[in-house]
Figure 1: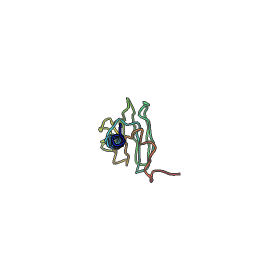
Figure 2: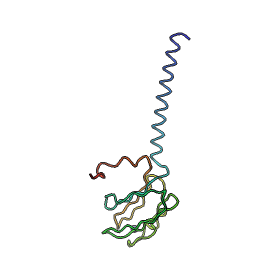
Figure 3: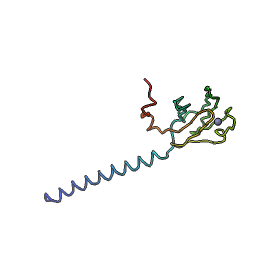
Figure 4: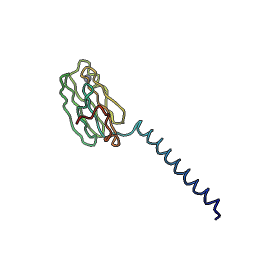
Length: 130
Ligand SMILES: [Zn+2]
């Protein structure tokens, strides 16, 4: 193998790595759009109330100054099982389990969102309180 062809070989490898990285970035971007979530994040009036793993079946009673919601985590999905809000829209929303899905209870200023495992480390700056 002469000097020239080995140079092209290196360029090919660099190109392949670049394509792999690009592919990975696109894949990560698509994944962030929708994937099986790992956590249910509850916020009340814009403040994080609690983060609950979807892997653990449990019932969570959320009592806030705005009202009461009962969350049920089951089979990797979360739903609002009961609420004392007037229209009970949130109860009718059903189960969510994919990232970026959301259940809102507007009268109670409550939101349940799904977060993936990889998102768990990165909080929005205004949500961190030390
Ligand atoms: Zn509601």
